[in-house]
Structure formats: C-alpha cells, structure tokens
Length: 199
Length: 187
Image (cartoon, rainbow over all chains, first blue to last red; front, side, top):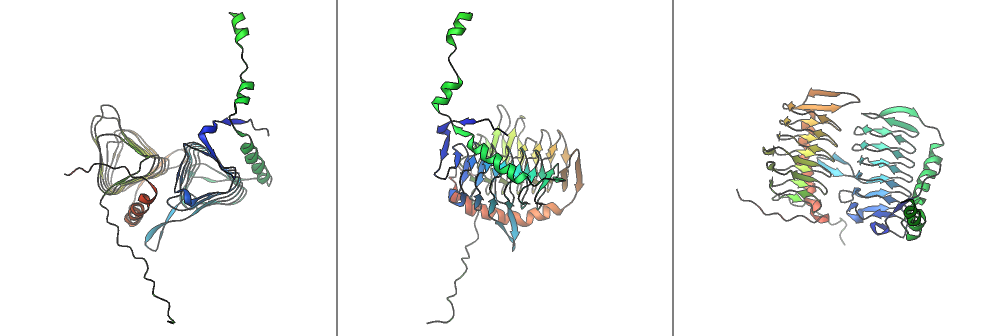
C-alpha cells in the first residue's frame, strides 16, 4: 500500500533528536513525565496529561488531531490515585479520541472518535473501529476486532495484522515530510502564459 | 549505632485547605461567569456566554476537564450546582444543573434541559431538548437507543472519591500549570 506523502509546515513542528515530530499547537502537560521513545508524531490539538501521572509512548506511534491522552485513576486505599499509562510501539490513534486506558500494547489501531474509558487494557495487535466506546475496565485480547457502543468483540484478525501495522505506521512516518520550498515549486508550476493566451 | 531504622514519619501533609478555584491558563472563560470556591478547570476547557445571553453561575467544588464546553445561548441565567464532575469533551447547553452529577466523556446536553441532583449521564449520550432528569437518573447509551433507570449507585461511587480527587488536583495542578489570576468577589 502506497501512502501519499503528507507535508507539514516546518515552523509548526518541533523535531527532536530521536525523530519525534511534535506539533507546537499540542498541549503536553508535565513534560518531565512524558516519554516519547522516538519517531512518534503528535499532531495539532492533542492533549497529553503528563501532570497527572507519567505517560510512555513507544516508537513509531502516531497520535492524530484533537485526541486526549490522560492517565486513568482508581480508588486505592480510600483515596484516588492516578497511575502511569503505557502505549506501545506502532500504535495509531485516530482523531478526536479520548484515551484513558491503563495500557495499550503494540501494533494497535484505534479509529476516529473512539472513547477508551478508564483502566481499559488493550493487548497487542487489536483494532478498535471508528466511533467505538469501550466501557471502563475492558480487556481487549490480542488479534481481535472491537466495535460498537458499547464496544464488543466482533471477529478475529489474521496474524498478518502485526506486519501490516508495522509497515503502515512506518510508511506513515516516512511520508510525513517537512514542507520544503523545492517540493512546492514542483507541485505548482506557473501557468501564467497559457492562462493569458486563453483569455 | 542504632539497630532500628530511623522512624521516617510518612510525609503526612496537612489536609489541603481549598480556598480558591483553579483556572488553568489555557482555558477560556467569558466575562460574566461566576465561579465559586474549589472549582477546578483543566486546560482547554471553555465556559462561554454567547452575545446577549445570560450569565453562568457555577457552584463549589466542580471538576471541569479538558475540552468541556459549557455554553449559555439563552437570555436566562444558567445555574450549575456543586460537586459535579464534567469529564473530557462533554458539551453542556442546558438551563440548570443540580448537585453531585456526573457527566461522562463526550455526552451532549442540549438546550432547555433541566438536570436535578445526583444524576449520571453516560458516555456519548445525547440528551434531547427540554428533557427533565429527576434525582438519581442514570442514562446510558447503546448502539441505537438510550437506557434510563433510577439508581443511587453511580452517585455513591462518585461521592466516595470526589473529595479526594479534588484534594489531589488542588495539590498537583498548581505545580504544572500557570493559574489564571481572577478577582475574588466578596458576597
């Protein structure tokens, strides 16, 4: 599958040494508690609540626009505790999601407008369809497809989903390119002489 | 050389005295909004009064999380009680809200609705216009329909953790966010 290159304004993103691309219009609270393991894209409007508890995001993960990543809380010995959130490698989270899962495995696809409620556990290689609402404390087993309101098991996934998700996130990362003046010049050739002759 | 380890007194911090509301810098609050003591506004939350609309009065000890929109479009004032929890992305446009309610993520309350005390509005619910929710109403969303029952269980759970949740937020949020300075109105 060929992914069309997507260009971004270089001034709007911060690129780190590890290859993370973080939009300047995203809100990362408590930066010292957020660990991006490299080659992660964080798009505009994303909110990551590192101030409540620490957040780990693995390699080659993509978090799309207006998603909220917030650690989940639990009543523990009479008081409320926020506990750390782990997100694995090759995870793609769609637009407008609310993710307060306790942990998300590797090679997971989460569609647009999903709500992953408190303390959910998503194992490796699962797919959550668009507009799914997972109730609190759901455990999604590996190689399964969940959808609906509330999100329930629909079908099994083939083993190749792991390889597919790896290649897909890698190609998405590689096709997410800074907007260089050279590429602009090629894509918009000047057509003024022909336009003038037509009139 | 003492054999017993020194008794490290567990850092028993004094109970947090909540004497102000926390409004994060990234949130938007219109002029004319009254917020009582103890309310917490997370970043990117917004409380908006449309042009020509009435004021919004928010009571004590509410928690308003990220991307919550509380909008007043009608000329009458909008009154919100105490101890409510508005979770991520909920949209509130209703006339009045009582005390001790829980609004789960991405629920939508449309205009002219009245919500009384100790209700729980489930994830992704859309409450139609003009509905009146009595005390202890629980509404949940399924694939094609809404389920409505009466139960005190959600409120019991909410009330058992709400005060500790507030204390935690009042301790931790000022460490990480710049807080808007607001003038304090003496009543």
